[in-house]
Image (cartoon, rainbow, N blue to C red; front, side, top):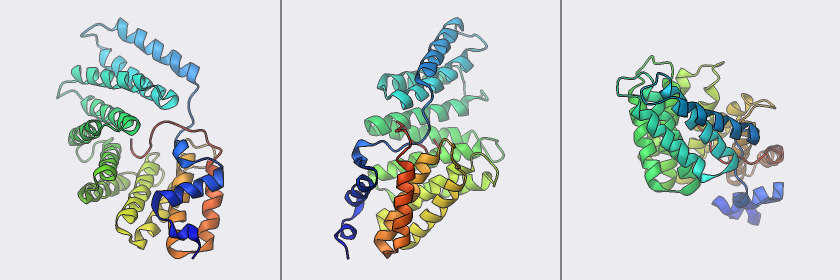
Length: 289
């Protein structure tokens, strides 16, 4: 067996990525979305700040202004990587919760947006407290979205992603099992043609790949490839999530090649990594969040 196949885990994956792209995986952020124009985004944040200043306490539009500012700050962080932007986004989300009492119809969305911002900061800074709070907030948001709620699928995806992230840090298999359960429920709510179906397919591909890494069951790799291909089919050229889908499917195929030594998997992985290498790096994450 070639020496490359005897190297396990991240070292092997990193070497392969460098071989294909000329860039060390450790030096590259996995791309997710095409970054928006930075100057336009900076101007939008400034406009949203000014709009919020015009909305004093109790103003009818205050909760909308606060939430919009938080979203733009999060986008700015993902584009520029400035930690103060996600810090400000979290502050804005907490302010939005302050004007969304428990009975407010937008409270669930505010809880989810705060959870997403905390996941972004955890991904950047690695603070476990952010991850724990994100999971708690994700549960609280989902509790406000019972069966039949139009946003329940997205909230299921977000909580599933938070639990998966916690699994990658703490290796509690119960978190991964719950992530699977939530994500499958989300997929049922995102039938073919639903624009959010991609996120559920992408999430399942990631979770199966993680369970294979943890337990070594080859059938999990088969599922990771299957769902990865299905997710990529929903990301034609020009789709904002095509880069991350190419990377993730290539990773699953590379792992399967390491198990089964099917050269076609290696060829496909090379092709996919080459296609993904042209995408711009993006700070952030994508899988239901």
